Amino acid sequence: MRFRVRVGGLWGGAKGSGALAAAAPDRSNALDGGLAALAQSFEHENLRVLAVEGPLGRDSLGFDLGILLTWKAAVLAAGVMSLPLVVRTMRVAFEGVDPELEMMGRTLGWSRTATFRRVTLPLAARGLVGATLLGFTRALGEFGATVTLAGNIPGRTQTLASAIFSAQQVGDRARGDLLMGFALVLGFCAILAAETLARRRLPEGQR
Image (cartoon, rainbow, N blue to C red):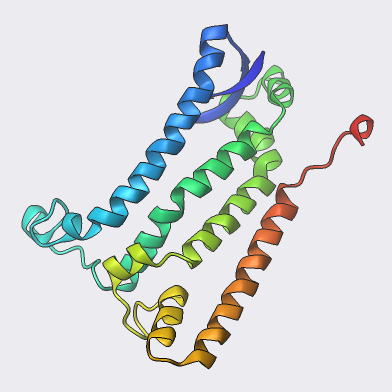
């Protein structure tokens, strides 16, 4: 049975024993679960970690990272929360590359790095772009971790999701509906582009 393995930081095709082949899906599930747990833990513990007395706070490091209640906090929160989706989609994109094409590159004398750069990466490029778009869409709708870490300061740390929330809170329905419509259109376009890029052409015999 042919499967995909991660070797030396690069994706390579290989034929393995039954035990290793059976372990590959478990390792992938463990990776997805670990990233999801990381995102969930970050959402609930971000303030404690970055607080003055926290592990990454001023008292522990000896200097202030200047992250809390800034745009950097919004970027950090949105990035961490979208990371599981991005990694999962990228893994699927790399696993979709035909291992035989990579083996052909190796028979030409290319190193594993050169094979990854010249064969694997170009073939997986559409999936990687799709992963980026899906991650952007996920980050666009992030609210909890962003508000907790960056706050909701108009003109500084207010995101699209928090702006919609603020408009609803003050009763500005027109502005809230406008922002909601913009978010829906932007999200739909991003998902449509990701699906279009991820859709692969079938071989002639399978059409």
